[in-house]
Length: 235
Image (cartoon, rainbow, N blue to C red; front, top):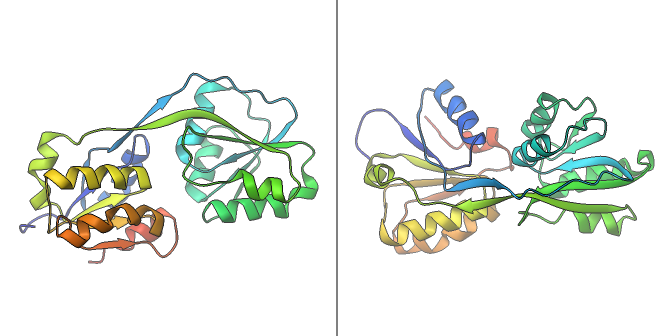
């Protein structure tokens, strides 16, 4: 990377990309927004019959539900604080945050099972990153999933590819984005680029480009939230 402003590539889909970019700017860093994933609604309907609570594992899940259904009466369990904040902003009044990952979310819901008079509905991506339902069902809860959107891989802009040598780091929030980056690096190696990942699962697809030198160092956050991820951007 050449001298000058510290430029960070934000690869997550909008609208999350813009929120991440704002946090980078607050840290005095220069974001480059060029998502490796795009969110596309599936046009599915939502059946809330018998549903006592909603479980969201991402901001995108909240946004997809809000676009699809006007109901805000159900309780919400959110995987982390940013997802919880998105749910409150969408109009939900009863929101609890697991402040962790999918396992923490499942534990939060199971721990509150006695107060649930009905099923837990998980509005999700077509290919969810984690399995929320199995531990809920194993604990005796009624739970089901509704796929509302899909994350579609997209190619970075030519200008982003041309700037790879000037970028300090790339932020990755999902395994799918990391897999797409691995594909990109096969033809556009960036040995000076640091990959900073939300979790070990996100970092896993980058093992090959790191080993072959197509990518610089790979690190993942000590806990799966964006504050911890941005903490990897040491001065």
